[in-house]
Image (cartoon, chains in turn purple, brown):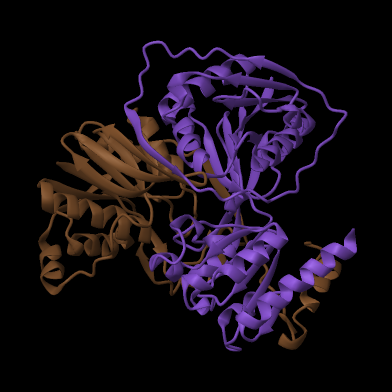
Length: 327
Length: 246
C-alpha cells in the first residue's frame, strides 16, 4: 500500500514542485502508516533521481514510452491507473501546475476519485474522515473539503511548504513497462515553443514584476538586472503583456497565472484587484510606485514611494554590496 | 458544427467575500453574480466566432438553480442559440462534470468548451473530468482555437511555454485568456434572448465526491512599512533581517 506521487522533470532536473509534492505525500503516508511511491513519466536518463528518495519516496517508478510524449491525458491516465492498481494506491498527489491541470481531473473521472486542487495544507485524517484545505476566491479565503470517495486526488499548490530533504532516506528505482497496446493518442503535437527563462515562474521563490509604470519595453533592463542579482524570475501585469511589452507567460493575475513566492517585488504596478488575485498568496510583498495612492500599498508589507528608475538601481547596488559582504 | 459551452456563475470580482451558517456556506446576500469570465469571454465568444465562420449551433449548459437564469439569458443575449439548465446545486466539481457528461453523451457535440477555472473556486477540474467521463480527448488551458476540416488546432499553455496541438473532433477544451475578446450583448441580442429556448432538466443524480465543510478568510496584510526613496537600500536589510526572505 502506498501513496502515489506524480513527479516531473524539467530542464534535466526533478522539479522543485515535485519535491514539495513528495514531501507532502510522505506526510500523508506517515499518517496512514504507508510508504510513498513516486512515478515519473517520460525520459529520465542522465537525471539524478536521488532527491525524490530524500524527499520521502521509498520507491521510484520510471515509465518511458513514446506514446506518452503527446501529453494526452487518456494515455497518461492509463499508466497512472495501472500503477495505482499495482501499488494499491488510494491517495494520489500531484503538484497543482500546468500538467496536473491536464491530467489530474481526467484521472479523477476515470478512477471515480474526489479531487482537491490547489491544496495549501496537509490533510487531516481522523477516523476515516479526510479533510483538506484549499485556496478559494483567488486567495481571499480557504475552504476545507471532505473527500468522501475511497480514492483521493490532491494537487498541492506550489510554494506551500519549503522542500525538506533527508540524506539518510533511501529508495529503490525501478523501470515500469507501460501497457499501452492498442491505445493511440488522437492528440498530435505540431509545435512546441519553450521560453529560455532559467527560472520557472510558478515555482520561483523570488519574483520581480513590473507594470505600465516602466513606460516601455526598452526600460526592462533595470528589472532584469535586479532579478538576475536576486536570482529571481521576472513577471508582469496584464496591460504590459496585452500590449506585447512582455511575453504572455509572464503575466500574473486573475487571467494570467497565480503565484505565491516568498518575495514579490512589484514595480510600477498600481495593484488592480485582478492583479492582487494572482499574487496575494506571496509571503512578502514589496511595492515600488510613484503614486502614493496606488492601491497596491494596502496589500504590501514594504513600500517605497518614488521613481522606479532611481530606486531600482539603488536596490540592485545595495543587493550587490550585501551579497559581497556575505562572503 | 455543434458546440456545447459549459458556463458557471461567479461573484463579481469586487465582491466582499463573507460566509454564513457557522462559516459553512458562502453568503450570497447582496452579491452581484456574473458569468464566470473564462466561460464567457473565452469559451462562449470563441464558440460564437467559430459558428459565424463555419456554421452550426452553440448550446450553453449550466448546472445550477433557477437563480442562475439571469446569467443564462445573458449568454443567450451574447449569441448562443439555446440553453440548458440542469436543476441542481453545483457544489462539487465531480458532480457538475458528471451531470454535464450525462447530458452530452448522446448529443454528438463536436466541441465541448469550458473556462479554465472559475474565479470563485479556482479548481480547474471540470473540463478534464467531463473529458474523462466521456472518454474524449482533453486539451487544457487553451489560448487559441481554430478548426481545419475535422481537426481542432489548439495553442495551449504548458510549463514554461506554449504548445500547438492538433486533435480530431470531438474533444473537450478548457479555455484561457487569448481565445477571444469579450463581447457586450446588444439590444437586439437581449430582445432575442427572451424567446430563445431555455430547457430545464432534472439532475441525473450523479454522485458527489467532496463536501465543503468550512470556509475561512485569509487575513489581509496589516500595515505597509514605508521606506524613504532616498534610503531605498534599506529594503535589502529589511528583507534579510526582518522578512528573512533573502
